[in-house]
Image (cartoon, rainbow, N blue to C red; front, side):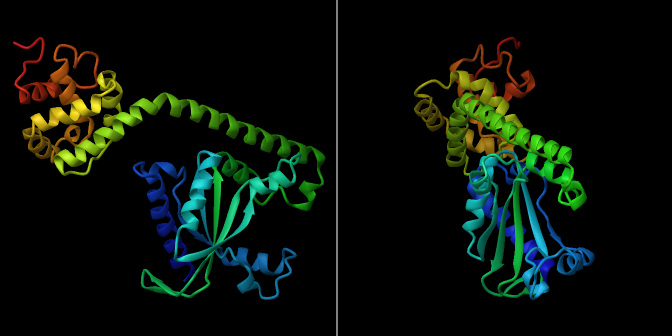
Length: 314
């Protein structure tokens, strides 16, 4: 039952995060594949009876019999996952630990960082042919990749009494935690600068994806090739390009069928930026292919479809 509940939480939360970050791919968002893990019997028994926990009913009181770990790149992405988790109607969610709250309460202490939730099924649910009882718990841990590295390094070691008694160990651990926190701040600053630099490309990419969907009736399948095309052809996407591109497509309705037909077998025509490439070829036939990501052979059909001859061809 706990295996099934962990799988249900994983699949439901993955779908919820995917909605939050669309059109970005959820597989790229999670830095380590998310999969549920049930606590092994020996670990469960040790926690119940040998770790000084004052459980009145150990099996019911232990809430991490199954857990899901989520690893993201930036601490700000933890809050995005929280929103996705809290938006799910299949469970209740109670926060068990929040490193930002702990940091605010103890600003001079550098310690283990993570966000923990306990999610419990609101009602009985069946998953994979297994019935899951109402109020079944699952622990969800949300960390950055730096916090995860720290946790893996110190797991099951740092809190042992013999280790805790060593001042040098405490000092080294605190220094490493402070470095992780500072590095996360630096990462966030780098990301802000990168986002600012990439904003024009993202605006162009969003517009051509919308036009591709409307013009061809196909769902775009952007890949790294789309980013290369946008990065090259965005130089022509100056103010007013949206209206100009839309007018161009209205004048060339036959391109919709051409793109759809070739998309069945060619990656290039599944990229929304193919519309931008057509438009630039029409606008600047002599320079459209210069130093770009497409070969002369790949450009030839675009010129031909528009009744043009690619420069340098006989």
